[in-house]
Amino acid sequence: MDSESLAAAGLLTALSRASEILADLRHPFVRSEPFSYFLPPAGARVGTTFTLPDGREVRFEVSVTATSTAFRVEGSITAEDDTLLELPRKSLPGIHDGLAALDDYVGEVAAPAARLIDQLLDEIV
Image 1 (cartoon, rainbow, N blue to C red):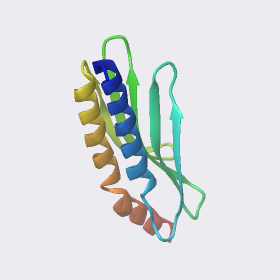
Image 2: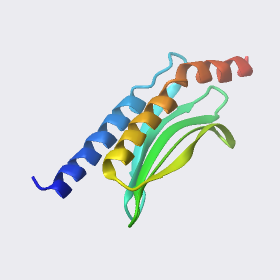
Image 3: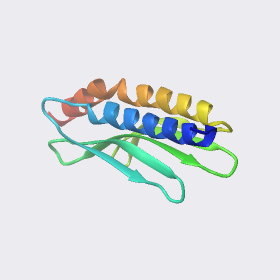
């Protein structure tokens, strides 16, 4: 494979890994639904949406997009209109740095999932 093909394979692998980690987020009392979609012209967003018993949706998500000069990586946790965690957008010139940032952001978004869901459930009762 040439270097461009290897970079594309690396991006697909990183997106699959991110999707799997976020899709595996679970809570015993809250329904969850993984999602993934493309962001035109060259990007993707993956994550999981939890639906609380009161109907509010909590989204854990990361995205990566490519521009002509950089890879942009973002991550967030939102509960309806409330932002619970918003990681700063990173613009990185190389694919390897972009994929490393994506991996880091997946970990940062996934880590507090159970605690945040528990806190939101406690607010309901």
